[in-house]
Length: 533
View (tube, rainbow, N blue to C red):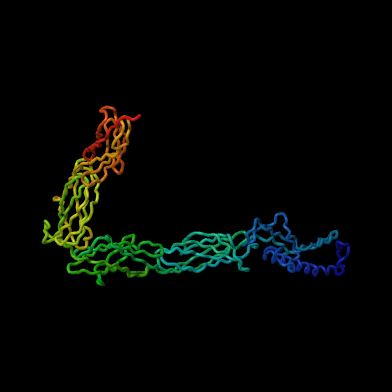
């Protein structure tokens, strides 16, 4: 019965023992194929994303305990579920063992493995983009993160950067998958190795790449400026120039650089820059240089970090100054009077007419300064006059100041390039101002009835020039004082009293003394007539 021994099948049939090895081999091949298919589908990602015609028989419905992952490179609200594969194929029931016989042996080597998160990650690739920058410039280190298979950008993922092995920071990729990081090129020439690294996520594989930051020399800029641009330069004088050299990438000064200096094409010195890139040039104009325009040139010859540069500045040498002396006098007068000041400019001390300098403008002013007791009064320009061929300048002006003493000062304008003027202050003039007398004129009706009130007007003027006196206090006997207006006038009322009867009456008007004017008086004669009512 060995050759013809039969097993009882689960459906009640009988299978020959000779058929069992062949059947088991067929089942093993089917299980192996099923496992391979599941592994391929899981490695390709989301099953639902496959075209309908190529989806396998394995269901992608999530099951309890299923592995979950966010699709790499997609902005989603929550994780996408990847189902774990179920049992591969239906297992045939075992044939029950005959009484006294052992059951069939279990198949070995056919196990359905669960996919891990590593197997579910989408491959990515990272590329460092080439960058070039000058010394001191701030450049952007850039790296691009994409899906390896599709080439699509991977946004919102962190990429870390290193330069020559040192970490310099990190940035998240933008919508194009590009991360960029600002980096200041240090003061060291030569290309630098740029490394970018993406650490990966549960859905994206890690990636890294190496690139190069090209480094070039920085351009430089030099400036020169006169220390005192308004100060004339003459033979024997010194030209003072401030200079500075910076790199144009960030305007930082270049420290410790040697600066050759030339004057009119000939090198005169070499200087070293300060930490801020500054340097100072002092050039003494030699005797015999002449009246002309000179040129100062400063240069930087360049080095391993910076390119050369040069700057120049022109300076003008003025004629030698002529020594001169200025002497002036004073004046005296009343307020309102016109007086004359005079000054003399010459090449001798004191100035003399036969050595005078003509055609120069002399400015006069008065001031009650600390040389005087209080009150002190600020300076006021009186006017200007031009010297004649004898060097004499005369200025006539009207006095309109308070009756006090003042110092007179004088100055020659517009001669800085030709004259060195010494002022003889000790012999300077004094302005003495005296109070002016005033005249009071009274106008109005020439007659009136006894008991009648008349309106009269008083006008106060200076006796020196006839100008109106404003703010003068004017008074009529029996009436309060009144103040004149800008025209020197004031109106008042006068009532003809019965005392004295019919006849002439004289109305007296007086003004008080002030800081410019003496007291004054005026009168008007009226004819008093009898009352008619």
